[in-house]
Image 1 (cartoon, rainbow, N blue to C red):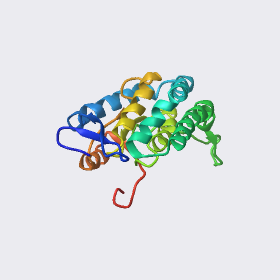
Image 2: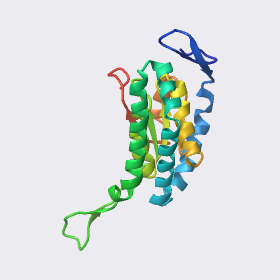
Image 3: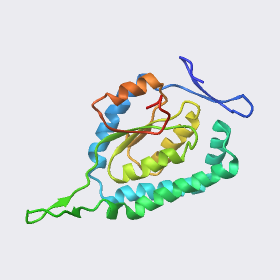
Image 4: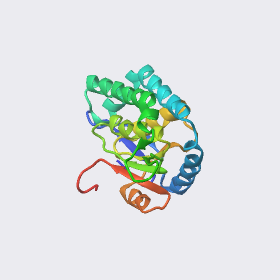
Length: 214
């Protein structure tokens, strides 16, 4: 539930508030500037450096699996066994792209009349992710792991009923060593998110949601 002053996370099983969060509407512009600045440096980092952040994120996910699983369960009602499996799946994704990212991003030869032709994979910039509540960790990590490994920066606009999950994922990447601004979560409403899509500082958008959300 969102008010003009706070965002309240509510346990769907009990109807009771879990925590309150300050919305980020006033900090959006600064967050975009941080993301653009962070991308300029992040894209120049080696594959090994970026992979080390994903590997560290996988370790954090596994070390704190129960904590993150219970956060999911309390915020959106996922059965605890499924929540634990979701955390492990996110760790697996981080490991996979850390181990295979350099190979997946390697230039590919392309047939042509030239002496040499190839397809090169370059990062785009800041990717805005608008994600749903039903898989509150997995939907984010399936975008974030490959996007960050490729040298992009990420901004997450998560579903309004899982603000704790949104903040936790940002914390995971920060603790894993991602430089400031490389991955940020913004607790914002749909109208603000729509304005972000039109912002020139956003290079790409990934969205999982309903027809109305699209």
